[in-house]
Every structure is written in C-alpha cells, then in structure tokens.
Image (cartoon, rainbow, N blue to C red; front, top):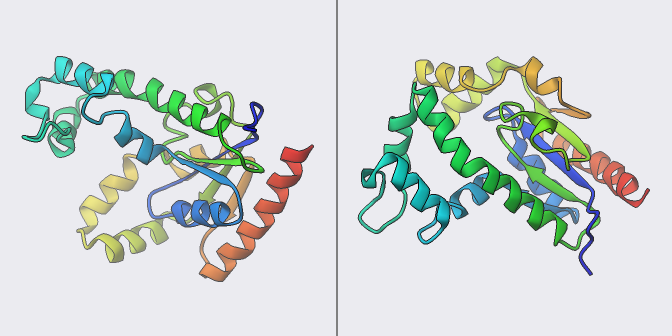
Length: 206
C-alpha cells in the first residue's frame, strides 16, 4: 500500500553541479524519484488548465502550431520582466508543488527524492514544508563554468549569465541538511549515494 507519510528528501544544486546524476543514483538504489522539471512540462501540456491560464494571460502567440507551449517564446516574454515572470510562476508553481507532493505520497518506496533545481530560489522549506530533509549538490563556480562550456558549447558571457540568474552557493548551502561536494569522479558520487541511501533509509524507518 502507498505510504501517506512518505519520507521526502529535496535534492537541489546549481546548474552543472551533477544533481541529476546524484538523483539517478539514489533512484537506482530504490528511492522513488519525482522530477520538478518533468512535472513542469506535464502541468502545461495541451488540455491542462495551466496552459489555458497561460494563454489567457500572455496571448495565443506563446503556443506552437500543434498547441504545445512555445517555451522559447515564453522565455523571451518573461526575460528581464519580473512582473510577467511572477505571473507565470503564480500559474505553474502551485500546480508543480501539488503534483510533486501527490506523486511522492502515492509512491511505494523506502523514501522519495524530489529533484527541484530552483529549490533555494523558490522559497526552500517555506514553499515545500513537507520535505523532511534537503540535500545540496555543491561545486565551485569555476567548475560550473568549465562544465557548462564543455557540455553546452556556449560562450562565456552566456555561462556567467546563467550562473548569476540562480541562487548563489551560500544561499543553497543555507537550506541544506546534507551536502555532496561533487568535484571528484563518478566513483566518488557513487560512494556519496551509498552513504545518503543508508542515511535516508534509516531516517525513514525511524
């Protein structure tokens, strides 16, 4: 039977920190995984109420010909426009949080991992009070820059802008119960995943 008291771990980190790699490793060890990025796409799919609200606010030009949300267009509309960004977040964020919570509470697993890239930016525990613990994947900014340049093939100015648009390391670490410093090898990340899996299984059982 699904647990209604599922032990939930929020997982976050800066761009190119390796948070997805850690989330996948915990999932492989038996944790239920809820991904905020995937849920964010689901809540704005055609036929969903959120998409109707978005088009009512922003206009039909944020839709593609097939009725899907034109994410690139919407990003341009909200870029550097705080009011418009907040309007979009007011439509989508409550639905994303509710969907993540419902997915976790209906899961059958020793514990749940909730991957939320913008957890610090989105209010941390104040907006996710049902998280029992938060783990932050941390790397130095210079390593983020190196990974982004190598991974995405973009210029340095864009990389710096992407990093600056997120919470800084201190803000993320301030909400952390557990920290994984991901500056080593994938083998090191496996060791960290083993340690966290044992920890969270024990806390969930208690």
